[in-house]
Amino acid sequence: MSIVKIQDLQRILSESRHPDSMDIDVQTTDAILHIINSADQTVPIAVAQALPEISAAVDVIVTQLHQGGRLIYLGAGTSGRLGILDAVECRPTFSVDDDLVQGIIAGGAQALTHAVEGAEDDIHAAAIDLAAISFNANDVLVGIAASGRTPYVIGGLSYAAQLGASTISVSCNPNGSINTLAAVNICAAVGPEILTGSTRMKAGTAQKLILNMLSTASMIKLGKTFTNLMVDVNASNAKLKARAQRIVVEATGCDEEQALTTLISTNYQPKPAILCILADIEPNDASALLVQHDGFLRHALQSAVSASPNA
Image (cartoon, one colour):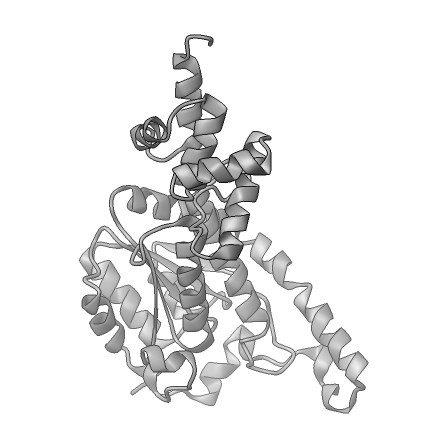
């Protein structure tokens, strides 16, 4: 079990006290909210300073996913929950397999809704959790820890490195231990929290922004979008079916009726539906072209247009 000393916390940036909130407990509601909001506005600036590392991480993720690997988020507490949140949203947004992007939290599923005391302090548990999903050298591990020193995440990154897998760290402390364990280190130094040590606040916001960037940019580079449209959306309910219809209308300029008819013919898949309309081809031909071009709609469209007798 890991032992944390007061001196250890004093060296962690996110554990220091914020000068603007020293008397927050005697402020009006309006003043409290202004103090919090003012601090929150500094988060995107800190994230922007880490963009070179985030870019490098995206390139690593895209390379490994192209080679059949998976993207695995690993964290404890708020960090673990944010990883799981980003992972589960990839399925409906980009129609990827459920296991392509996964989130693992210290303490297991119970820790999503309840604090599992001591789970984050077990440096050996992450290796067991990763082995349970057959984590291997083709995968990418993103270790998330606001403090940069969570034993569970340290153990996970060390295990991944031993397997020869790609490793990325996401922290909010420049001197965090995980910063030296990962091949790519992303650190958004957001500074002290308004409530001292409550890293679900600014640090959590920074982590959410970074994970959104990692998954979204990776999926864009894997051909999951056409312009800024989510053409691989999984239309699994009424709202998403309406969104798919709107995407087809936006991408092609057709009317709603044609969009709906074409979507029905492609089993509500916007990408082949768009290709059918823009290239004036049948659904089976559209699907074959997309497979030929690794799912990149723009490339498939260019190929269809150049092959057309009227081109």
